Length: 312
Image (tube, rainbow, N blue to C red; front, side, top):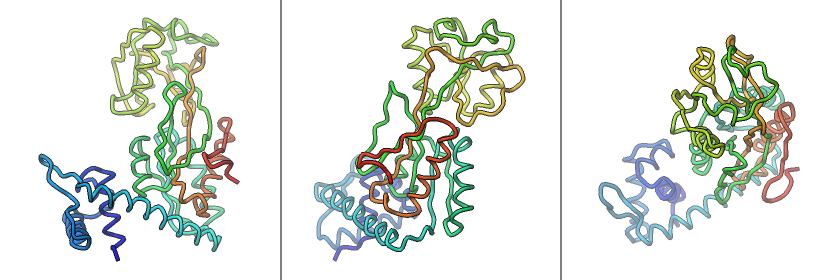
């Protein structure tokens, strides 16, 4: 009988593309991964990996076994979830990954609710960019991922992952207090065509959205300053160094020297909860999704539908 942990290791190599990536996903050493793979090769009597340049790739037999391993691991997780659902106990450990503004604006209330209502559940937060949180969700390192996308650039949801829209978050433009438009009720991007901009680093998902938004509006993309933290972006705006487009979710009070002005039309981003479909019936997963929904009610309009239908 094939060893489940060795199959898990092979699947991790398949999904991450390397021994190092598998080791990071499984929280073990690269030596431990190599040993598991060698033992698995002896078990099946076939080569599962071969060298490719400085790295490795799966052989045809390795690809076939990794595909079966993925389905088997999903089935094992489904069995574990059904057993947990049968017990009905909300317990154990659950990790939620969220991008920065959701981690700040949504998750504190969720984690507080879970601690108060389910003391036997250890709920943890990991602040991650959406691409990383989806990868860790697929690998099983996190249980729920709170991610974002834009109507113009919809999120690609991987197979085996369920998705629920939590809220739609409006973004406003942040202007220096002495800007001619700072006291306006609304402003259009066309009217801001000559501005310098403060944006996000190029490796963050919001960077591409800002670039494309300015491009679609026919605005010269003069993003002179980049910063991950909105507090840093707003400090640059307050100093008169540019304008920034800032979401309402997780936003604190307007800093001195900055005015938020609604844009017309109002740009919005969508905030989703993702989870592995095989864990839908896990009690800890269900109560956490409900807590996310309840927290979102106070921020935007929630819609809680999965590809499989409504979450009861």
